[in-house]
Image 1 (cartoon, rainbow, N blue to C red):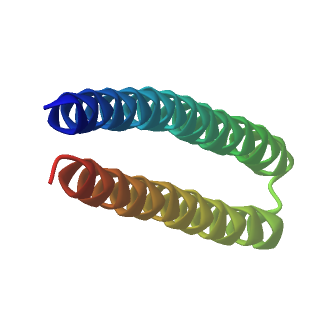
Image 2: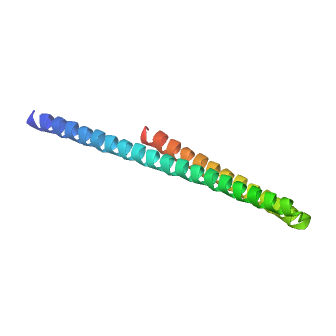
Image 3: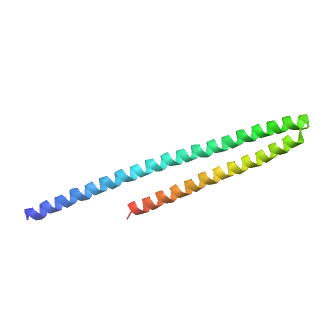
Length: 115
């Protein structure tokens, strides 16, 4: 009957629309994943660069103090070096934890969108 044909056509259009929306969401999700991954990579790179810069500065100061024979200042610089290294490790750990958290979120999102 005409009603059955019309209903089937409507169902086909609805299924096509659902497929279109799902494809759009998957593309958007992939784009967001790429952008977040790029931002995390940039943050990790900056963290490493900042840590390396701090390390170079501390080593330079340490050599200056050693050359002048100022052992107390040299000891203080060594302590600052350790603190700087601790901060760099903490920043790296934070970046890695954020990356794992976001990867888990995206993984959950992908799994949910495939259901």
